[in-house]
Structures are given as C-alpha cells and as structure tokens.
Image (cartoon, rainbow, N blue to C red; front, side):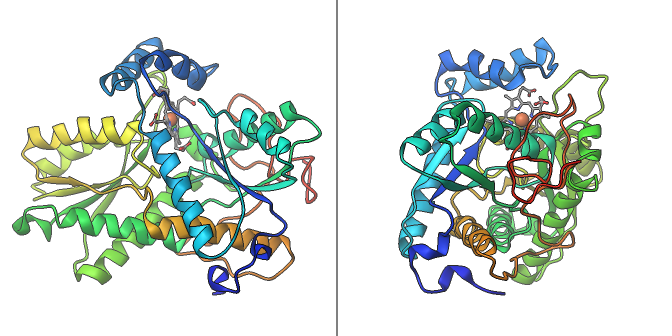
Length: 381
Ligand SMILES: CC1=C(CCC(=O)O)c2cc3nc(cc4[nH]c(cc5[nH]c(cc1n2)c(C)c5CCC(=O)O)c(CCC(=O)O)c4C)C(CCC(=O)O)=C3C
Ligand SMILES: [Fe+2]
C-alpha cells in the first residue's frame, strides 16, 4: 500500500485540488430553527405530519440544537490540524444540504476566493440515495446557482471501507466493552446500528444494488475481526436499524434497534454494545434514538448496555479523510495508487456509475457520476 500521507510534504500532494470542501447534512442551532430545518429536510419527501412533529420534539428536548454542526466544526478543525502537521496548506470549506452554512453560499465563497478545483468529503460513509446521489444533486444545484465561476468539484469515494474508519470504530467498540460489568462483557453482543431507509432505496443502492446493507455488513465483520484481534474474544454481532420514517405502509429496513434489544433480552444475552457505525458523529439520531430511547429500552429490560462512540474526530478517522484527499489527488494526476481498503466489497469508487443510488422521485442533475455531463469521463446513458 502506498502511504501517500507520509511522502514528502509539499502542496503538490493535493494537486490538482486547491481546496477541500466538507459537505454535510446540517442541523438547527436553536428552537426557532427547528421547523424551517425540518421543512428543508422533508420538502417533497412525503414524510407524515405526525412523524415530523415527533422528530421536532426530539430537537426541542435538546434546546432546538442538533449536535451535528458543532461536530462538523470540530472535525474541520482537526482536519486542518492534520493537513498542517503533514505540511500541506490547502483551505477547507464547509457547506450543508439543510442548514447554514448552505452549500450554495459556500461554493459562492469558494468562487470569490478563486478556487478552481475542489475535492468534496461528504459526511456519509455508505451508498444510498440519501447518503450518496442526493449530495451529488446538492453539489450540482450549488454549482449551477453559482454559475461559470464555480469550481469543478470531485467527490471523494465513500469511506466505509477505509482502514482508518474501521480502526476508529474498533477502538470505540473496545472502549464500550470496557464500560460493561466485567462478568457480562465477554458474552456481550455487538449490536451495530445504522439509519433505516426504505427497502426499495436499499435495493437500488450502489452500482449493482443492495450496496447499503452489504457495506454495513462488511464494516461490522471487519470491526468484529479487529476487536477479536485486540481482545482475544470473538463476539456475536447483528446489524439493526434506527430512525425509521415515512408512511407506515412503506417498508423500511428492519429490525428496529428497540425490537432487537427485546429479542436479545428474551434470548438471555448478558450485555450489549450499541455501535452506531452508520453515523459519523453524534447526530440527533445518536443522541435521541440511541442514547435516549434505545438505552431506556435496555434499562427497562435490565440488559447491561454501553454505547460505542461514533468515529467523530478520532485521529484515525481524521487521517483517513486526509488520506482519501491525497489518494484522489494522486489518481487525478495520473499516478497509480493502491486504495486503502478493508472488507469484502473492496475499495469504493471515485466516480459513480450512471444508475448508482437513483433518485426515487426521478432523475435530477448530479455531479461526480458517469451520468454527469460536466465530468470529463462522462459516459452518458
Ligand atoms: C441514509 C440516511 C442518513 C445517513 C447519511 C447522511 O448522513 O446523509 C441520514 C442522515 C441524517 N438524517 C438527519 C435528519 C433527518 N433525516 C430525516 C429523514 C430521512 N433520513 C433518511 C435517510 C438518512 N438520513 C431518509 C430516507 C429519510 C426520510 C425522508 C427522505 O426520504 O429524505 C428527517 C426528517 C424526519 C424523519 O423523517 O425522521 C430528519 C430530521 C440528520 C441530521 C441529524 C441531526 O440533526 O443531528 C442526518 C445526519
Ligand atoms: Fe435522515
């Protein structure tokens, strides 16, 4: 494996890029932001009113402030530190889909700063319409809104398979095992948790379908293996889902984490670790759906439980982001790169194939795919 992050340090490591753009979901910063934020998220999505009110209450209970923006500020600070540490000077920008700083405003700022070509790190590790193409549509809209002065933007590949993402998650699981009562820890079940999505969205995810679940299963088994190497214990594990939305008649991925905890308790599991591998930081889904709701379920069941940390600003995850930037830059310079990757699906791809993660409501312009007319490698359907 070519370690691009430790080679000689000059700005040339990021050529042809002159900026890194972190692209995220965004979240409200106070009570008055909650409704407009939720309107942004759910516009045209057919989310029932009762669900919206319920989720609004989750935000209200936290003072109307989602943890996600502060987490992103912290992540960006650590990425800047890491770039400085390896001697690379490149500006880092931040734009969101659903809240300030909005992507279009940030791309405008990049254009004003003279940025010509940027690499985008999207804070979503896996393939799905919500986590992949929808961000590519957001980028297309931002670039169109800004017009001719907008930079060209390349999205960095999904990070689910990156060794730094896997090892950061392993560290978190080992840490959580250490919080369990000693007698119960060795028999603990590792319960990996991610965001539920509609079954049809899961079926159409990735270049050949079914990528969303396959990628999570691969991460879960890589982490289980690394945990076994570190602790000497081979833990049983499951993949479960949280934060189901949508109308009740539309099937979403199951089992729900709370239902699964009931099952484990009935089977006599001595303890559980909840490992939120589907979330890169402590989003509202983690703060509410896991730390509030699922941990209340374990308490009611008398099941000892610990929640593993999200990768957040773990140093391995921060250097994974910088590694992905250097890897892609080298590939764009025409150098041959070995992609750092762990797990059965193999390294994720730079440019999405034409029908990857389709929009369930019909096609919209999207950057960074083979069906993107602005992409020099376009291979239009
Ligand atoms: C796959 C996936 C990710 C992971 C990838 C990624 O990170 O992008 C993700 C992230 C997030 N989802 C978030 C919040 C919300 N998601 C909603 C609704 C939905 N999510 C969906 C999927 C995903 N969502 C889907 C299929 C819907 C139904 C509506 C639709 O088809 O789009 C709703 C509306 C209410 C509701 O329906 O629950 C809210 C408020 C926040 C911010 C949290 C915070 O504030 O800390 C984050 C990071
Ligand atoms: Fe969501």
